Every structure is written in C-alpha cells, then in structure tokens.
Amino acid sequence: MSCQCLLLLLLGVGVSAVEVQRPRGVPLSKRQFYEEDKPFTCLDGSRTISFDRVNDDYCDCEDGSDEPGTAACPNGSFHCTNAGFKPAFIPSSRINDGICDCCDTTDEYNSGAVCQNTCREMGRKERESLQKMAEIAKEGFLLKQQLIHEAKKGLEEKQVKLSDVQNSKKDLEEKVETLRSVKETAEQPEKEAKDRHLKAWEDQKAVIHMEKNKARMAEAFLELDDDADGFVSAAELQSHSELDPDSDGLFTDAEAQELLGGMDKVDTVAFEAAWNNVKDKYMSESNVDSPSPVETPPEERESISENDSEQYPEDDIPEDDDEDDEDDDEEEDPDDRDYKVPPTAQTNVKKEDEDDGTMPPYDEDTQALIDAAQKARDQFDVAERALQEVEDQIKNLEKEISSDFGPNSEFAYLYSQCYELTTGEYVYRFCPFNKVSQKPKYGGSETNLGTWGKWAGPDNDIYSLMKYEHGTGCWQGPNRSTTVSHCFSNFYNYNMSRLRLFFVVQVKLTCGKETVVTSTSEPSRCEYLMEFITPAVCQEPPSLDSLRHTEL
Image (cartoon, rainbow, N blue to C red):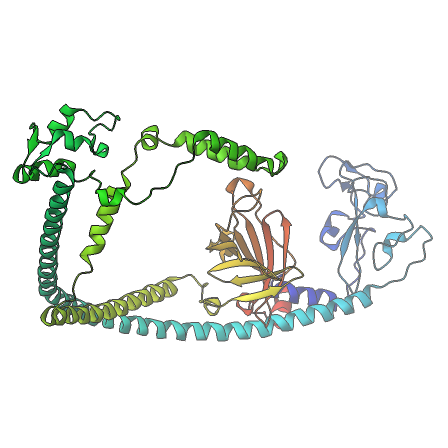
C-alpha cells in the first residue's frame, strides 16, 4: 500500500461524513441517478420506472439498482455509510437479516436486531494503525535517502578504485611478461643440462645392461653345454622346455634348430645370435633348483570348496557376490586366461631395473642452473597470481558497478550481504543479488534454492519482484528458483508455473526501518515465499495538506 493511500485512509477515517439526503443504500457517488422528482432509469439502462418504485421491496431492474435499500433483488448491493470509519458495500441479501454487517447499523433498520454503532471506535483503531504505518514509511523513506546518498558516494569510490586497479593491471602485465622472458631464458640452459645428465645416465645404464646380458649369456651357454664340448646343440636346447616357441608342450628338433639359426649346434660366437631368440624365456638352472609351489589337483580343489561351503548355511552365502564373479568371468578375455607371462621373465626385468639403481645427483653446475630456473619460475608464478587477483578484482568491480540496484541505487547496500532466518527445522540464508539457500538446523548440507536472475516485476513497477532461479533439483519437482517481491501490504504475487521447471521463492520486501528476513514458507512443493523488510522500498509520503487540497 502506497504512502498516499495510507494518508487518504487517514483522512477518510478521520473526517466525519456529511449526511446528504438520498435513498437508503445509495452511495454518494451515485446520488445524481436518484432524483425524487424524476423517473428512475435502471443503471444498466434496461428500463425506466417511476421514482416511487425505488426501494418499494419489489425488484424492477435486472441489475437490482432500483432496490439499493431492500433485499428484493438477489444481485443488489447496499451501501454502508459508516460515518467515522470506512464506507462499505454488502450484498442486499444481508439487509434486515438480523445480523449487523454495517458498523453504523444501517443494514438492520427494520429487523429488530439490537446493534451498536461501532464506527467511531473502529475508526480510532484504524487511524492509530495507519498512523504507525505512515510513521514507519516516513522514517523508512529518510533512511532510503541516506542509502541513496551512500550508494552514490560508494559508486564514485568504486569507479576511482576500478581506474586505479586497471592501471596497476597494466604494470603487472608488463612485469609478468618480463618475468616470463626471464623464466624461459633460465629454463633453456636448465633443460639442456638436465638432458645431458639424463643422456649420460641412460648411456651408463646401457653399458651396465650390456655387461649383464653378456654375463647372463655366458652363464646360459655353460648351463646348456651339458657335455662341455664347447657347443650348444639342438638336443641340449630341447632340455629347456620353457624355450618351446609355440608352448604346445612338444619342443621339436626342428624348432630347436630354428632357435639356433638353422644350425644343429653353435659355438660361443654363434650363440650370441641365438641368445637374442631365447633370453626372454630362458630359465636359469639355479632358479629351477628352488622349490616351486605345489599346485593342488583339481579334484582336491573341488573337495575343499565343497567342505568350505558346508560351513555356512546356503542362506548366508551372498548371491550378489556370485553374480559379480560370473560377470567377471564372462568379461574376461579367454586369451588372457590361457596365456601367462613366464614368472622368471618378469622377475628378471624387474630385477634388472632394480639393479640399475637411482639416477645420480646433478653436478654443481647443473644444480645451479636448476636453482636459477626454479627461482625464475617462482617469481613468475607470484606475479601471475597477483595479475589474476587484479583481473578478478576488476571483474567484480565492473559487475557491481554495472548491476541494476534500482532507479537511484537504493538496493546497492544489499550487495555482498546475507541475511538469515532460523525456523523450527531450517536456517534460510538470503543473499540479495547472489542466491537463496536452505540448511537443516541440526546438521546437514546446504541446498541452493536459487541464484540471482533478474528484476521481474510488472512494467510499471519492475523493482517490485526479484527472481532467483536454477536452484538445486528438487525431489519429484522442478529445478529451484526464487522470486523476491516487495510491496507495502500483505499482497504476494508469486509465479507457480510448472512449465518453467524452476523452483520459485518469492521474497516480499516490505517498507521498514530494519533490514531483516521476517518469515519464509513453502506454499507449494519446491516453491518458496520469503518476506523481507528493507527501507529501500519506502516511498516519500505526501503531506496531509496537499492531499486535502487534492480532495477538495
């Protein structure tokens, strides 16, 4: 309700009505249609009757306008003058029904009901209430003027700060580029020195691997040369079944000769070529001497499995695990099951890697280059982070400066602020121009009810509605959104369109001296209504003198 409306009501209830002669039940605004010396024309224009038929307890006009003071017409209405309070209309069916509807008792003029005129007492209470509201509106408007002044001053300060930060950004950009160049210059010799060190280490490892390979080849030659004649024959090679090329369990003489390069036997020189064919599978006899784990026969495994299962009732065996195992078996590649890398080959590769040791530390000159490059990197990173912080600051300032905080930036003071309301179950957090959230009072995660969208009021009052949308998805409901409205009455206008697939929270901003969330509710699933008091919506109250002049 506007301040002008409040003052009009104050005038209305504060001035005694002047009685003007007119038929019972006719408002003063329609007095000209009821002239006793002229025929009466129904207000809908349907017919004209003699004036003596007005209020004769018989309905002549279709719109009931000929019986404003009786209950003859079902669609008629009776005007209560209510001197000392507010005039009102009641349905004509309530006239003389034994119940006092008008505070001045004029509706029960012929029913015998005992009624008391309470208009002046009601008017007094109404004036007190409206006077308090008018005082709040006046004080709130004064606070609003201060908010506007502070917003203007704050905007000027932010614009100056933005200019300063933008200038500092240019200096930081130049610094970052300079340090980038220093970093890249320092990293080039660092990379070259580290590459040289790594190459030297790789060369050293290659020599070590070659020496180990030769020693292992010589050992293998001696082990394979069973008759110590200085040759390894195909027959001697066949004694090592792990060297069978196709692992079919039948290591033929032809396969052995193929491994030896097509020869029946080779000496130590020719064995070097043959060694490349067998070294990955060759198992030293010294490793074979160690006992290997004895594999349990299939029959015994089945027996053990049956005995184990008997220890538990069938109901206790989790079926899901069995199904998972079956799924795993189905997904496993048959080729992967049939083929297994010889354990010795894996062990040898791992052992060789372990024998290589770790790369030796960098020499002093290389370490000095690494330290210099790291220092340049650290300085560059610090400058780059500083530049990023300045860019974020510029972005935030530009966003705040360009935000729509009302016609005179009266809502600017709400920016970067949050207001909470604790109810029986939840803590609601309202952050204007940011988001609305809900959190369980006794622990639990926060739920985003909506993030700031836009002003969504009607064209003639666009700043009467704030909309927050795209909140967290709601169980069996749309995505959340919040709409914040403000006015000076108990009217709330909320949009519950399910087609938009958003939660709706309407926050009614009421004129007041404080800034506080007063209530919240969920009138419909996943749609919220919030009430918020702020002086930013208070309007300037007109003077009583100007209103009296306007009425006259």
